[in-house]
Image 1 (spheres, rainbow, N blue to C red):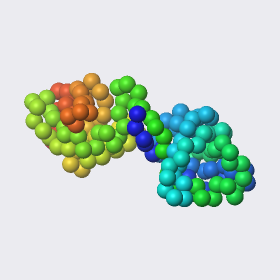
Image 2 (cartoon, helix red, strand yellow; image 1 turned 120 degrees about the vertical axis):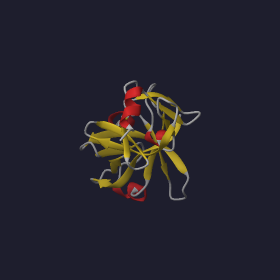
Image 3 (cartoon, helix red, strand yellow; image 1 turned 90 degrees about the vertical axis):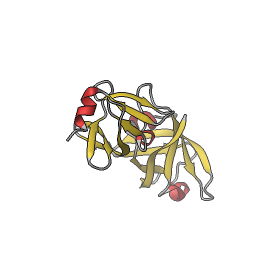
Length: 166
């Protein structure tokens, strides 16, 4: 399991100690379910674990949560501006974006074409951005042959290799 940021507390909501959260996870419904545990740093910077007791989804980017033991606006003021983390595991065959960034990308001939700079989300899906100018669709088996977390290498399929030729 890995500790990942899943949101940031941006404000309070109402007077009953509810927190308005800007979501940074692509699976907010799962991450912020009632009963899930989250990690938030206290005023000393030490992370403490809290249990979610209520969830209200406003839209894909904003969610409102309540934490066990906090039911008054005065109790939650110190949480505003804090990041929310959770110990999570990527489902089999999926990857966290930060795991892919920095990986070396190789074409079908095993020649290195560059390093993943960042992941770009577009309407058609996610793209690996290599050297800020090369975009490769992150579709396993079609464009991506393999991803090796240990060696930090991504190997492209024949079609993936064709995308890199401009």
